[in-house]
Length: 325
Picture (cartoon, rainbow, N blue to C red):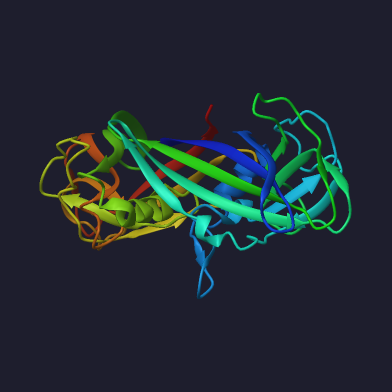
């Protein structure tokens, strides 16, 4: 099986607001993505959501849609699924929807989606709030849990009075490597297929629109992109070059998720009528935009695979998510 590694990181800025929205206190720090959060990330839709006049959550927003606040003090641990003492849960943006944005950062050997998410809760009674989390749902397991901390990282209790609000701005960063690595996969009736695989990006990857398509369909563990057989010409293994073939054929099927695996398999199938000829590899992208950014696997042995209408090719590609630092 071909395995692709994605790196996930979270960062939170918290603010205590008065009834008029003025900030009284606040700080920012990294946060812990729970095991249940990695499960949610591997199963939730990656798409942003537009309700007709604003974004209610951005790219990769569904798995952290709801903010939870509490008064517990236990040290965060990846195995936790709940706050110590939850007192509120909300998916309100508090009027800060203009701050729900996704940007992209690019380095020589990587590209990252940086998705900012805002949630606000107004209090009707006084509390000393010490912890927070984010969840995919209005109840049940959290995806993220962390203590409120000061600018030096020490836990704090935030005294909130009636009419005051806590605003959490959560920034989620998902990074993928750009470039090619050697892989080998057993293929029925063929033996061991070797090749080189990796994400490619031509120029700026098609800008924000092109990179959003990349992350929403190709990178997202539950996303489905278009399969493009690479016929007639061997792969150059240049991560800055577009694939040779940009026509779609075959199908991509996301396989059932195993909780705790933090990996989602996408099965690529070229049926008997798909991709026939001298097949040098396969690519995943969005049809019509495959020249700008995507993923591809170029075969090295055998290369090419001579495919005809008596043969079907099935390849499994696993998208695995790990916590970054």
